[in-house]
Length: 178
Image (cartoon, rainbow, N blue to C red; front, side, top):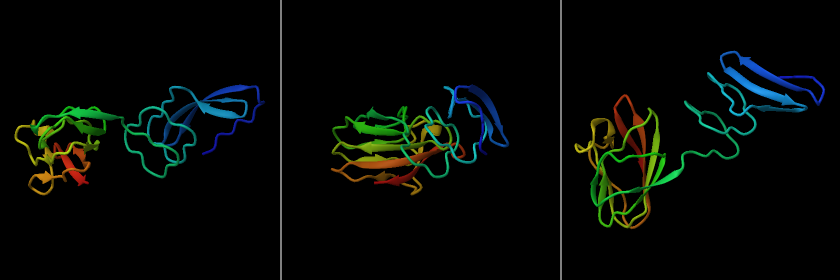
């Protein structure tokens, strides 16, 4: 759907566009430039093309083709200890592991919303093990490796593990390792 506002260049027009099955878009046309207000609230599903910058939070699914930069959660560090680490508090979608001075394992993370993706990266020179169904972690924080056993990641090189949270399983599901 195209919005055409054929007014003089100096005229400012504010609009609330109701899109069928696509919620509402609040914006402004100043001269020949159409822009959205800050903050711009889109309620519902947007189907079609969005051109320009989207700044803020996207809640729900983002599907389709993108061009330009897509920036996800910031990187945070997690200071873990040697041995088993259960119920690890996470605040971002990418966590860099620091501090262990011997072999260590991860048994669970504090959950967030269904479908949350988490990648952890081991940058220390010690083996990291992903513990399947760690009894020391709270039930909803546990990891399901899908192998039925623990998964050991490589040593002496950066390695990573990717998880997705499933509210159906009340578990972090291990989806890949590197």
